[in-house]
Length: 371
Image 1 (cartoon, rainbow, N blue to C red):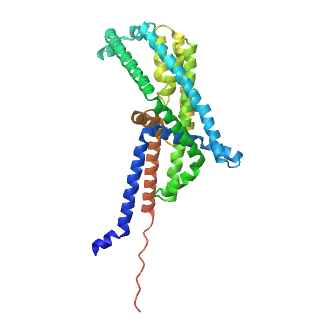
Image 2: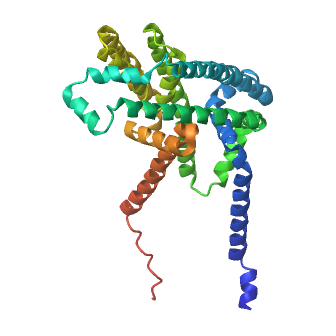
Image 3: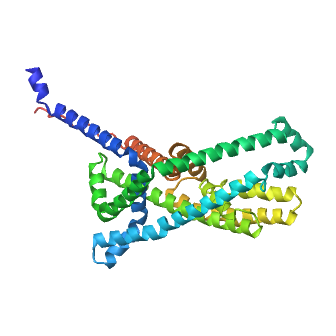
């Protein structure tokens, strides 16, 4: 009798359904893993450009398919084509730099010797303590690094050539998914919010936080990176530094790291100017880097990223570095999103506990009394 009650109980049915739901969800994630990057960026594109899609919907009398296609065309013109052209130019600049290093026209060891020669004694001794003044050793390290770097680049190029079909398929998966998320995203979002087993207020808070952080992180970081890279590249071109486009892209990429990013490129160049007697160039580059390039980071980033995400700068920095170390380039979005959801989740938990503690205990109802 007990066994019959157990096999027909609603509890068993609920457990079986949850087990099945978890199993099929894990299987679905598993089959998406080969295109995880394409799926992720398809979702990001849909979230970032959704306001444009909504604006077009209002103007075109709710023609969802046409509005989604127009938005996707805008994505291709504003994002995909510029990135493709920039990648081609960057490959050309990188190849030119590699040729200059191989031919000896660009000699990092010579640059290092000039800097070391003008260092104060205490700093020279400190570098010598760590073995950083041995020119032969340094040359060997640079040669090995260049060799490993060129080998890694060649491997990546060969791998990209071998997997060109996967790259093309992933690209179209990204655009295809972005199109349907733009067209049907509102209905899908409602279904997901209903399915999440949380209270309506908590669901709304977490969903709003998730979307806000993704939009702020992508738009803010991309705008800051593009601005700092362009300003840095313009300065390098003005001072006659070869490969200005390559250094501009590197500064833009490193500027994804708040506070310290672009300075990792322009500051050593400024110090080299000072060490080799080009005083006005060094002073001018430092002033330009601090007052112009640095001002972009100090002014735009808090407005575009920190204000919307409501996260302190140190947390944005740590989560960005950690996210990129774990997830690669996509980590500059994933890291801050995880940090923001972590803060939002614990904030909801703390608020609920405070409300529970502050709420007065309800007196127990008196039982019936006899006459």
